[in-house]
Length: 318
Image 1: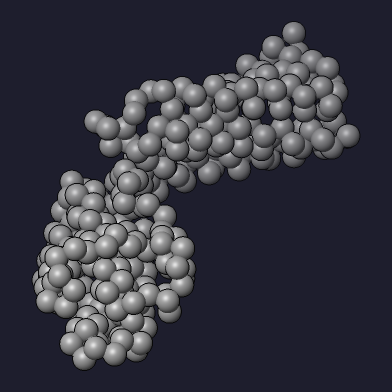
Image 2: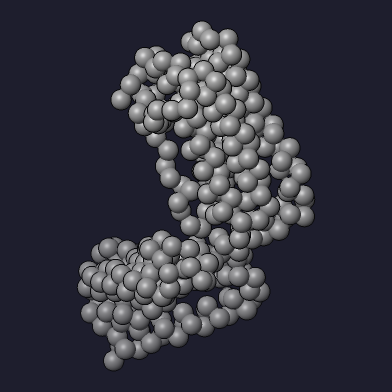
């Protein structure tokens, strides 16, 4: 790995060509990854790709004029000082905010490279081009804003925000809600049946822990293996499975942890209060993200929770 200050002008130009080619391909991947869910933003990054392609052609023309046809292979990872980029362009589906932040970081890093390269270059033509490119990168943010205004009308922005919300609900909220409902409701019966049957808070705690963690593992794998997300757009299966499994375990642990309280009556009261909070949370999420009327959501969730709770108490009392 070489220090930047040890690079010759020939190597600086070769590195600049490599950087522009990489940025061009990254923006092409952004455009490809966004075109289905966010077509207008995909078009925006395609326009930015065209600008990087133009920079690369100008650099190649100057290099050919100064040093001939052969361009040595020198990349960002061959030179000290460059930030290691996370390959977010390989992730599907692409997140719009993540892409825009990455693009902003790319422009800042490239601008600083051109400014530093121009400051140590003695050849007038090379320095002029590097200065010009630094200025263009400096104004790229403004150019991006212009492209946004051209391609992202208020209606398009509204449509993309709506699409982003749908993806968030589909990929995050739905598996999380399914897990929370399963963990909060399905573990009620074994936990309260054990508590009523044994009158032991420790026994109820152990049963609740086993039921919650077991349900979390089961729901996590069931969600992850349901589909790979390529056709449904539900996102990466292991992300969905992790969310679903974690929320399932959390839903059961909520009314299990109160049984760490040694006093049986106090533990039962606190656990019952936690159950009410869990059911209220599920009702709010269904109303907020699933557009379910509050009263309808409360009745559905409350009825299901009540039936499972009564089942556990009756079995524990028998």
